[in-house]
Structure formats: C-alpha cells, structure tokens
Image 1 (cartoon, each protein chain N blue to C red):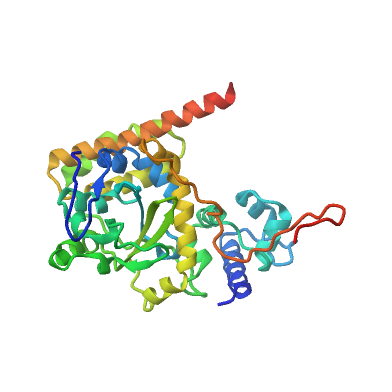
Image 2 (cartoon, rainbow over the protein chains, first blue to last red):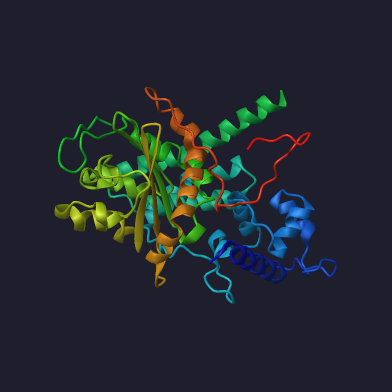
Length: 170
Length: 207
C-alpha cells in the first residue's frame, strides 16, 4: 500500500472513532472536533486538521495517546483490521489464578493506589503483574519474591518521579 | 545470579548479566510504562529488547518478563539462538522457531510460545557500535497472512524496536559498567519519506 493511501485510511478511521465517541462538530469540514484532537495530541490545530484530512500521520507516541483517548488499540488506528469494524483490541490472553495467589497480589498491591491518581495505570499494572505471576515456572516462595519485586518497582518509580519533580520545582 | 559461561554449539561463550532477574522484575513498572506504547501496535502482544555487548553479556528488558524468566530458570535460553550473537545477523528478521535447538524445540516452544498463547514470535537484529540489539516481538493474532504481514512491515518493526530501545536505554545504562551504551538516532519515525522543510538563507544552500 502506498503511503498516501495509508494516511488516508488512518484519517478515515480517526474520524469514524471520533464521531462514535461523540467528538463531532458542525464547524469543521470533516465534522469532528479538531481542537480536542489537537489538545490530546499535543500539536497545533493545523496539524490536527491535517491528521483528519489524510495529509499527515502522527508520530508513534501520539498515535498511542489518540488510541487511548478513543478507547481503541494503536494497531487498529494505525493499520485497521477491518475498515467497518472498530477493534477493541484484547490480547487474547486468559488468566487463571489460584485464589491464594490472587489474594497475595491484591494485598501487596493495594498500597499502589495511594501513590497515584491514575487508577487505570495502577490497575493495568496489577493485571500485568497477575499475568506474569501466573506464568512463572517456579515454586511459590520464588513467585512471591518476584511479585514483591514487581510491586516494589512501582514504588521505586513513584519515588523517582517525585525526585525529578522536586528537582524541577527547585 | 551466577555467571554462566557457555561454550557449546548453540550460544557460544555467552553469559547472562549478573543482575538479570533484578533487571527483569525490579524495573517492571518503569519498563511496562515505557514499552506500553509499542504493545498493541501491529497486533504486537509482547515486546522484549535483548542487548548483547561486545563481550557477549546479555541483558534483557521485557514487557512480559515471565517469558524470558522461564527460559533462564530452566536454562533453556542456552539452546535458543535468539541469544546467540553468531546466529543473529545485522538487519535480519527471523521467526522464533528458527532459533530453537532441535533437541529442545518442544520445551522452548512450550515455555516461550504455547504457555503464553503466542501464535508467532520474531527477532529483528540491529547491530550498533559492536552491540547487538535483538528486538523480540510476539503476537496472539490468529489472522490469516500474519506472517506475510510482518515481513511486509519489517522496516516499521525495526523503527519500533529502535524507538523501544531508546526508551529503556537510560535504565540499561545503570547496569552497563564496562561498555558505552549506544544510542540510536531517528528512532521515532515509523514511515519513510516524511516531508520536511529546509531553511535556505540568502539563497545559499549545500548540494
């Protein structure tokens, strides 16, 4: 597929999703709220307009932000499995977990909600931790130790971010 | 983690970083945050960046560390040429299965693919400043033609891998004592031939 068609297909999916999610506008040529898109993307109004007109393609990290905003996967937005069907991408992984292990993880991880206002981020991390914990080929003691390390990593990151914010503030 | 100096016909003289387990799990949140941009693109469900230094020391950064952990703890990694600098050619793209030692194929395939319901895994290799970077991706997609699709977008996958490497580079630098940590430029472009402006001052420009 040549680049221009690729970019046009992207804009079509972008407009479709924005309309579905209620970000339509009677003022814009293509009927969607460009200002909102620009704000989410962190770009100018003109650039956001180009995204919707099929004249420009966002950077990878911007596509990820737009995908989260529109509750879809970056891969569907960028490539599109099916032009008429929006893909709410799921990884296809099913997690089976013993109750005791789940209790251990939830008991250890409840402190993470105090570290951040972004509960989605924490929940995603806990799900990832549950996934890894249930796929480790090891004894319970080692698995618990690894769970502790993973959950500590969130505290570590939070402290690191606080230090960086404090440095910038001073 | 004890040093494993391996001399066999699978992973020649390769060894894991002393702190490999720390690296896999101690930075889980930070690595997940940084690599989350990549997961979901092009049906990618797993991404790992394997760094092999000029002295053949292996460090791994993974979105799903249980994948690599199981290979390490069962010492199956020694029979997976995804960790062999001699098997991995710069600019190459190979499927995971092509790297498994025949005698351990079923075990590695189970630990790496079936356990996680991955339908396909691939390695892309980038050589930079005598380091080898292995961008390891896997998908659970069951779409027809998925293999051909990934071959078609090989260049984009390299760009994604470069982008991911630069995202975790500063974490890697905490563990790299003996080598200068390489940097990859222009890692955030996903398509070629992006239009750009060139400023010409007083009609003077370089040919």
